[in-house]
Structures are given as structure tokens and as C-alpha cells.
Length: 446
Image (tube, rainbow, N blue to C red; front, side):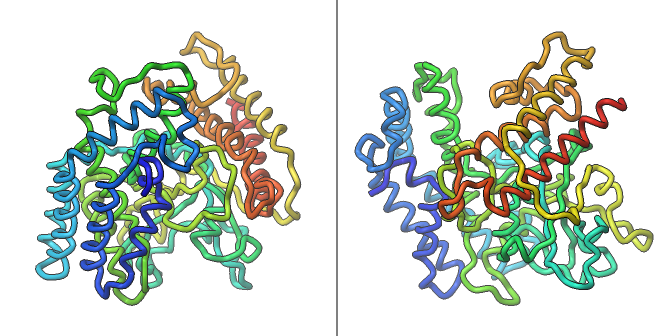
């Protein structure tokens, strides 16, 4: 049996979901997944008894996760009720009406306080990538080729997980590797452009994520390594024993919304609940969704646990009746970089990180509304900026995200080869280098 960390990983959860593929309908798959989930949950073991390496995080970490496990297993009814509520919403969709189901999913989100999962715009304020398949008719020097499908060609918009047939959306990914996975094509068969959001500070994004895994894998080890004596049963620090119910509901919602597709046809059962969520969010003035890719990333290894190479950001677009083919306001909110005609450059990652540090230093010297100098950007400073709500210079966030992203992937490998020695990695480095150069020039002119 698995430990808490292994159980809540997306890899383990996808294995449980795939075990349901013998069922002939999605409602049965959900019931099977629920049974597998509950059985495994009842039998979870302590991290200190697992073959994974997280026991090395120390006694404080083990004590916290053991307390969480005991609390989790005493709340089995919450787990069961959450599954039942989401399965009922899906059943209402296929047996009653779209309207009933849509009202049900919004009530579920409101009643369970899950609308608080609003992502900080800073999460999407990073270099993002989009691809088109290489073909003769593609004008790779026109940014509109990489933008959302034009409104006069909405008939070409197919069903995607969070978008509805006929309704254009703009899907961007946090890495070239993720784009390749989403397109299911080798990078050499793709034309890739990069988009840097720079006018999104007031936009509202909903975050679909795995909160329990994020805490016990990405947050807690850092806190314990810093010497904190954090205690799961201390009410002063969240998450704690009193936040278990919303934590469970967020986690299960994420897993069901990202259920892998078994067989794709005209109607894709696994997309029903995600698309209902999209409709509900559109009706309540959200601007997009941030979510982790559902693709298989087994090819990548040795990446820092904090590396966010598998993020997708879906931007909702505004439709202009009869007057425009594209959401021009959305396009204007990006700095974009088209594919270059020259061959890929083999860039050195340390040079790019140093360039990023120099530009951030330039910002700090020219920033009149903040006393402290920003001498280097690291994850801790970025987290403080995000949490404190300081607006700062519009370029601080993407530069900090760039530096952290590159550092977190320095030891990563794709199929045993250093990440930044692959075609995907070299292309990313080239785009990051161009981004830093562009921001530096804009700063000097401002």
C-alpha cells in the first residue's frame, strides 16, 4: 500500500483512474474510481514505512504527515460525500438537463467555498508557449496564426477539456515540453511562439490544482528544512487539522476534472464536468483557468519538485459580434515572440539566469516606490511579493518566474538527456533569452 505522498501524486491517482477503464460508461468509471480511492485511503501507511524517499525529510515532516493521515482517515464520509455530489452532477447532465447540472455545479462550488481557489495573476505572469503544426499554408511570421481560432472559423473549434465546441479559447503552456505533450507531436514538427502576459494583474483566474500534494511535496519540505517546528494540530498555521474538509474537496474536484480520456468520440464523457465548470466561470466573470496538464510526463526526471513545466493556462476570449475576428484586447495584453528563421542556438543557462538577475537589479535601482533594493530574485522573495500583494514593476513577476523556472530545471533530464540539451530545452532557452533582452530594452526606454 502507498503512503500519503505517493497516494496524492497525480501519477498514482491516474493509475487508480485507469483501473476503471473496464467500465463502459463514465458514471460507472467514477463509481469504480471512488471505490478504489476509498479502499486505498483506508489502508494508507506512514511515510516512514514507505519505499519512497520522503522519510528523509525528517521527524517533523513525518509527524505532520502522520497527523494529517489520521485526520484524513477519520473523515472518510467527507470523501464519499464529495464523490457522490460530483457523480450526481454528472448524472443530472446526462439524465435531466444542462441547466440543472450547471446550477448544481455552481451550488457545489459556492456551498463548499471552492470559489476561493482564485489563482493569483502572478501565476500566469510567465513566459507561455503555443504551437501550430508545420505546414505549407501556415504563415509562421503572423502572430494571429498562434492566437485563438478566429470567430468566423469557430466551426473548427473542437471539444477540449475546458473549452466547448464552437467557442474559441486561448490555450498556452508553461514549457515547450508541455506543448509537445499536448499536441502529441515532436517539437520538430511544430512551429512554436511564446507569449508573455503583461496586462493581467486585474484578471481573475480559477485554479484547478492538487492542493494536498502541493502542500506535502512542494511546501512542507521547504518549511521543515528551514527548521520550523510546524505541527499539524496547531491552529495558527494552515493547512491544519481544521482545514481538512475543504482540502479533501479541492483535491477530489481536481482529480475528477482531470480524469484521463479513455476513448474519444463525438461526445467525450470526461470533458463534461470541466466544460460545465468553464460555463459557470464564464457566467461569473472569470477570465480563465490555470490547471496542470493531464498528459504523461514519465519522460522527465531529476527536475526540482518545485518545477512547473506542466502548467496550462486557458484564457477566455471576448466575442465581438460581426466587427472583429479576434479578441484584440486579449492579444494586446501580451508581449509575444514569433519563431525565428535561424536555427536553434545552444545557449548556456547560467548566462540567461545572470541576465535575468541584472535586469531585476536594474528595476530595483529605478523603482522609486520601494526602499529596499532587489539584488537577486529567488523563490522566497517572489512568494513574499505575491503574498503581500505588492504590485511592483510589471516585469518583476515574469523575470522572477523565469529565473526560478530555469534554476528548477537545471538538473532535469528528458529520456536521460539534460533538459537544456534537448531540442525542447534549447528552444525554451532561446525564447527566454529574447524575453530578457526585450524587457531590458523596454526598461531602458521607460
